[in-house]
Image 1 (tube, protein in one colour):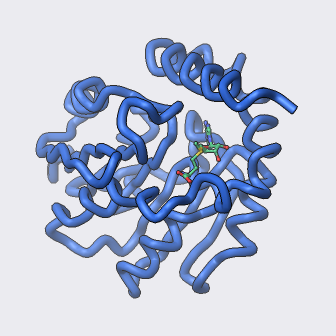
Image 2: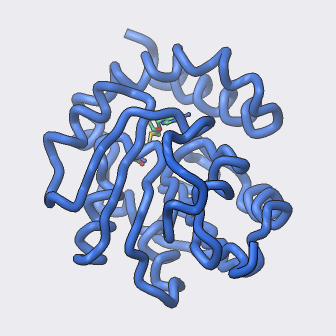
Image 3: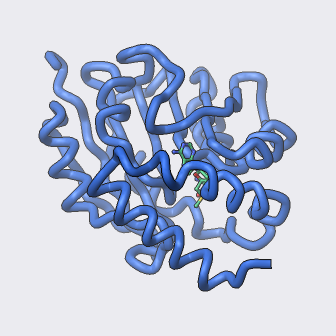
Length: 207
Ligand SMILES: C[S@@+](CC[C@H](N)C(=O)[O-])C[C@H]1O[C@@H](n2cnc3c(N)ncnc32)[C@H](O)[C@@H]1O
């Protein structure tokens, strides 16, 4: 059994490297999937605290339209995706994750037929351009080109963490904002929710 601190260091190291050099993700993909496969069965019991979704929820309060098509990237056991489906009862919600064990857990917990969980890699998402009105990431490494590609014009991205800078997969929100700004996002709200932080970014209507 790998020590929890070692896992967290590996997650932070991978995040730092991949955000700077996305091409290096191919070196980390397999060990990352193994690591999260091994964590899937007790993820909700050990990680999904009452404050797990606070920063994501706080950012969603700043959305001024109701999204119809939602994507949760790095969905894990689907905690955020389930909550999004409850918040918007007419929305279709897709959760995508690299780890087969996480996807199996998410499917077993699905709360409605409007939720769908699929295996997929955030660096090459299996979706069309502009397919989603809202794309969320909670405690997940952002691949900015893909986020911008699958978000519809006028749609939004929320990048959230549950525990601020002590979250193992953590990217400074100034960095997230700068990367999205370069890809056609024009309106931003930086939000605090419980111990977490999030950034809501809205893509320009014309991009
Ligand atoms: C820290 S967990 C967060 C899970 C969930 N969002 C939550 O906060 O409970 C990160 C998740 O992202 C997944 N993941 C990591 N890199 C990924 C990638 N490139 N594509 C898809 N999923 C990925 C992992 O398998 C894991 O389930």
